[in-house]
Length: 534
Image (cartoon, rainbow, N blue to C red; front, top):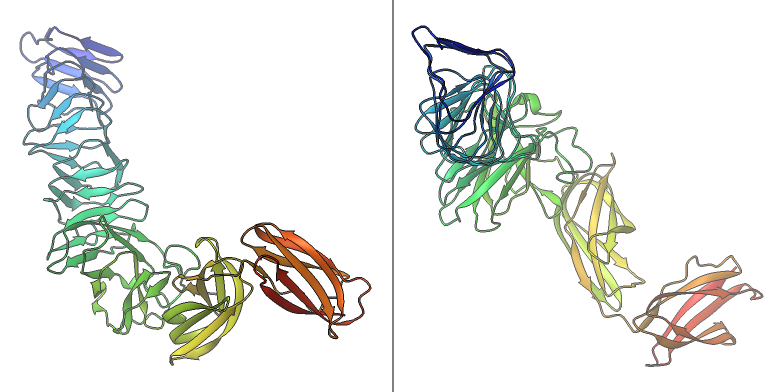
């Protein structure tokens, strides 16, 4: 035949080759038509090709050469065996691979649509995949790329799976949107040609991952959709080589990644940075931002790179002035652990925490904390937990409002019902904003039986609940006496392990002061409490 036109449907060539007879032949495949090539065959050779963008050529044979005589519409590899590119491939729409071994060769393969590889392997040695479509493109691949190049005048390259590029990621033009997926640059790889209009959009849960070697540095070209916010990690000599990842939050939170938002005095971005193997790093962190992200009252001549650590924003000790002329940048050395980072003015936090500690003395927990400075500080809420996870507020201590002096505070926790308590302090300013101290743990040895203070006291009702704690099943004798020593009530009880509640009836008791006493029949432990009956 001199020409072959596939206008619709599917033409399958399982084993026999299609050949052009004579000169001037044309192979045409229209939109939505399929040509399936089997066996060891390749694309039929014709003098001219008219391959529409939405047509499909599928290689489903064994060992096959993928011809590069023409651009493909959709290119599909769907069967086992080597599928070797005969030269640079140009794909007008999508590339799909579900099986087989695609051998890319030392060529640049351009694709204007989506890359979807769900099966098979990609022998990428020497090859480059170029994404150059004018619309949004997506890439999903179980195989790593060697070189990945983006050259998009419009639209984004969206990750649809985790992606690895072992060698060079070349940002010629356009942006790569991480979304929920990670982009990993291989240990020997690098990112080139990035700038304020060519970078990774990193506002989802996906991260940009690069290796930083001992004594080396890496710039992470990340940003919002329209704002470039690169971060640089530099490791001092003696640090451990490690993989670092970076992503961004589009706000700054009082609790690092949640809670109330800062509405002034910060650069409105959070750099989420982490290392693959915690520890072994002594790093200098540098970040960059545009003036458009500086919130009201932010002072770039007196700002700091804050590090959210141990439940609070830790600002360091040195006032810094931002460098540059829109964009601006700032750096901080001595970073040995990684978490959220943000840029704020020196006075951005209502409280500068210095210390929190605690000790048990005579069955009471004493909590102490110290602040370096306070700004619009309303109060401190003391929160306690017996499991280190679920905290409840147990009391409040008034703050000092505004002060630059070191201030000490304390709180006494009575009526302990557990031998182990965890504490944290929640500082609240006059605007309802808050921050947390670090968490401390206090361990105490409680008596075998103890009771909580009566509440409410004075007692207005005819009866009141009396709570007693026992660390095992225990017999006790309870008595109630008036102030003359006359016994009003005496009874023996058996307490169960844990908390016990006894409804104590004072009907008929005249108003006055009474002494509640409990004697442990096992070890003669004796405790008393006074109650006022109204």
